[in-house]
Amino acid sequence: MSPPTASSENALPKAPFAGLWRRFWFWAGAIVLIRIAGLAFADGNLGPDEAQYWTWAQEPALGYFSKPPMIAWIIAATTGLFGDGEWAVRLAAPFLHAGTAAIIYLTADQLFDRRTALFAGVGWLTLPGVSVSSFLITTDAPLLLFWSGALFMMFRILRRRETNSADFALLGAAIGLGLLSKYAMLYFIAAAAVAAIFSAPFRKAMLRPHLGLTALVAATFIAPNVAWNAANDFQTIAHTAANANWSDTLFKPGAFAFFLGGQFVVFGPVLFVALLAAGYSIARKRDTRSNRFVLLVFALTPLLIVAAQAFISRAHANWAAAAYPAGVMLVSAVLRERRAMLAKASLALHGAVAAVFVVAMTNFSLIDRVGAGPAVAELRGWKNLSSQIAARAGDFDAVLFDDRSMIAEMLYYQRDSRLEIAALDPNNGVHHHYEAFMPFRPEDHERSLFVSILGSDAHVNYRFRNIARVGEATAPVGPDEARTFALFDISGYYGPLGIQYTD
Image (cartoon, rainbow, N blue to C red; front, side):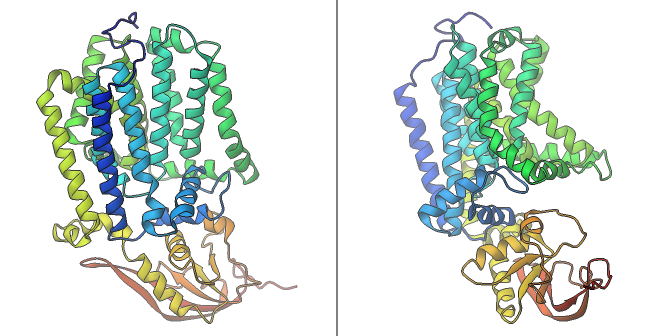
């Protein structure tokens, strides 16, 4: 990279410009306060994953079946302070994104200029994907915070004239904490490897003996989770691999197209087009020595990896979220220089969408009126269903479920009840947290209320003698849609294979 100068992208670290730094925090503070108010008045239930994370938080551990432990630790902290209401479970989300935006501001301030930093920081907070993520508690929010922290430390290393061990150690800490949040932090390591291959200045700055300190610190942070996995048959790693779904029919152009279209929604149409255009421009110029090239690598690496996964099997749009801390800094610089009015128009559009989203999340009837009810179906009906099931469960030894989502929601919304809740494994294999840690126990659950997502007794009719349908639990999840579970009184368990067990 070019030698540092007062005006170059590689200038030495400087203090944030007080006026614009204060302006950033004015907007960040206002957005966070509005989102907290939105959470307090949100018109919906916890989603199944959120409810599951809450159950994990009741017993903080070094690992869980499907995710590393950071999300549970965060929920344990917010609910420990403010109780178990939905808003408290989700409370960390807007703060985590505000922290990410602040780090993005500081990084862009050092790489470009102060107004670009302001646009990048506020731009992050108003991204459509961030607006959605700020109303849910997911593993993406802490991942993006630590990913951005790792970017900041990496560029700090790149721009220093002298090697500083503390910088390399802090980079390792950010990577380790990111891995404790979501294993997608591995994309950061992959991006660094790509940058080292193609950029000589990056390779020279990063491939030093001090990089061993980075690896050691990162390994120290993630080691307890690896030990937990080793003690639990590597459940989290196995589940992550299963999520890739490579055992299904492979090569799906439709899934790839859907994923790619989702990026226009997550990042915003103007910004995503600008990112692709910036990538084309940098590749055409073969400009591998600049910070912009490094930002491009850290944006495109996770995007391309997840896009490949989408083409091979499947991928959700948010799986590539790690692309956008670097992406928002890069497009902020490009648009500020060449299309300033377009940059402002994009920011205004995203701000308007963010405001509308807050209103919509506090009044689902507005979403229904525009025909978007299915988009929030996963946040509806669970409390109602759990109350119906609990009302029918009093005379049974246990309530058995064949659906992970309903177990999680039942545990959350009936948290003050004394119901015995268990997972009935339908296929003799452990596929989620509750099958692993809350399984059906024949010796204790002699007569149970079985709650089935199938609407039939297919999961019990080959292993229980006595099966009687006793009704159903149903709740609307939209204007013309409902979620229904069939209820059965079951007893006389005789084994998963239909073979009579004898002493």
